[in-house]
Length: 220
Image 1 (cartoon, rainbow, N blue to C red):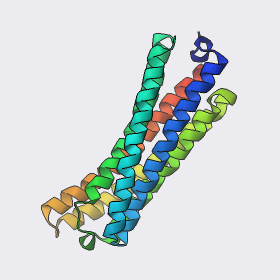
Image 2 (image 1 turned 60 degrees about the vertical axis):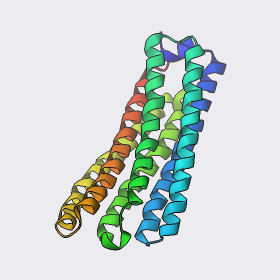
Image 3 (image 1 turned 120 degrees about the vertical axis):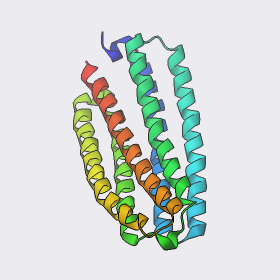
């Protein structure tokens, strides 16, 4: 038996609808999280705070949707292995937003006048890749029933974005090490943690792609 053979067509659509709603909210979280970096680059501290407030609000709303989905899954008749895959899909997707919340919060504790623009530009490129990955996550979810094979191609695109982000991370890490030699230790640590949170968020996108790929391969 495959995943979808355990669920009626109507319930298939319901599960996808709930998950797409969740990913939609995650996309919004990432959008505002990258705007936090934009405002920080422009030294717009009021903008940083406003965008952070949006990240915080939207991430909590994503959590609410996550809990609703998990409640639905607990009441549905799924094969235990299939339920585990769906739970992993939801929880891993939620991690993408959680790391975005983390990098946004950390920027509140950094002096924007002290961080080189080249570092911020590369961090933004990493965040942009996370955003593009979440858009692909949504497209993949929407194709799960109609065209599972297309999900495999979209998952590959997410994987490529993660590889590109990893390359940028190695590049910006060198810049951060140079920055650390002439900055306060606290500022150095926070900038590195921003970088790590963005990378972790992108890594989680790749993990989501793996789960979507697995579900697509099981589709009839």
